[in-house]
Each structure stands twice: as structure tokens, then as C-alpha cells.
Image (cartoon, rainbow, N blue to C red; front, side):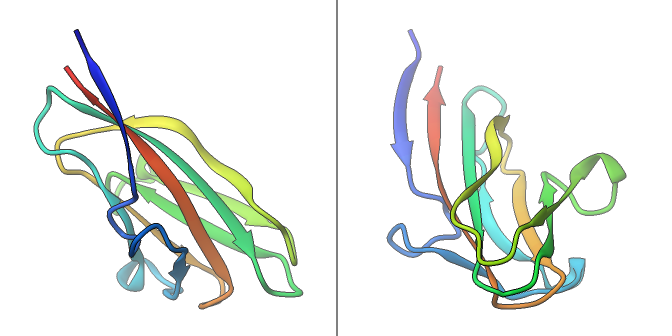
Length: 118
């Protein structure tokens, strides 16, 4: 029987917001590193907010950085509250979720992981 535990994002310090400081893929920030191996799963829930007076494009690199299939781009409205950007998608095998934005230090990411141990 599987067990579930709620975990902090590995890129967060004690559950605090993760500031998206990078503006290119090479400067992207680590949001979360998934559980190692291919048996267990991380169900990832991410939210973003924009503290700028200008809408900004946020790019999520989900499990990789070089393949178009790894990228998710969305515009986060100006002065927005929390917006759901990752609705419980699964990841495993130590793959990494990273983020960068059109401007540094204006987008924050927070969330949690439901770790599923099979």
C-alpha cells in the first residue's frame, strides 16, 4: 500500500518563497528536485505571484532544459496574487524543476510536494 507525505519544495528554505532571479535557461533557479529512483513519485503543486507592475512571462523547465517538451511558458499578471502553475504533475528519478522569467526578482514561486512511496 502506498504512503503519502507532504513535503517542502527542495529549492525552498523552510517553506519560504523561491525568488526567480534568472532571466535565461542558464541562470534558471532550482524549484524542486524529485525523489530519486523510478518507484516513488512526487506530485508537484506550484504557485507563482508577480510583484511587478508589469505582466511577466515565466518559464518552467519541467524535468529538463533542452527539449521543447520540457518547457512550460505562461504570463503572470502584474501585481498578481498566487496563480496555480503546476497542478499536481508527477515527477521522479531525481529530475529537476527549474524556473526563469522575463525579469529577475519579481516572480516568486511556492508550493508543496505530495511524496508517494509505493
